[in-house]
Image 1 (spheres, helix red, strand yellow):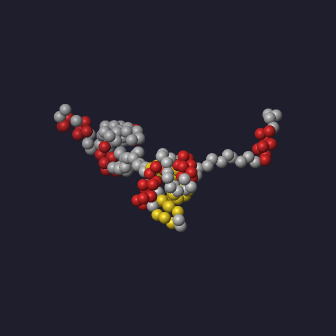
Image 2 (cartoon, rainbow, N blue to C red; image 1 turned 30 degrees about the horizontal axis):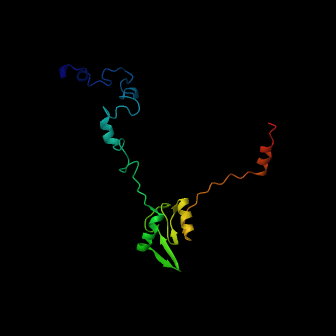
Image 3 (cartoon, rainbow, N blue to C red; image 1 turned 90 degrees about the vertical axis):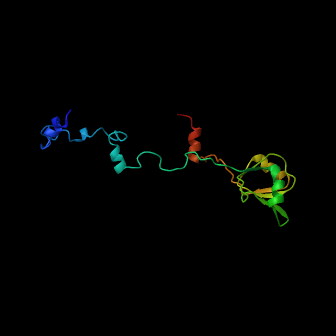
Length: 162
């Protein structure tokens, strides 16, 4: 259609431009959709202007980072002591936490008695170090305690009258 024949050109001077007397075609129902509709289409210019960070991720790190844990076995203690161990008060000490190890596993056998500092160990590692007259320091023990019953709860639990 020729521009000179268009309705918008003819009614350019009017207050409502052919949409009625009571402000039709100007209310919220005519804004191009409800809510966030049209933000990838006809309202994209408002997204660029007013809310640039609406789409996409907030940060640049991956949602599931790769965490590398460093473990040592009981069989490695003799070699680690030769490289990094110390002798204090007649005891052979080995600080695995400072060496960057997270956990001591129970694989293999240990020949000498060591005083080992580490945060986490397995039960078999504790047994093998104690069998060689050594000790482990700095273990975080997770214990599950049963909830304690009050005397009133004991009376209620023995009553089964209903």
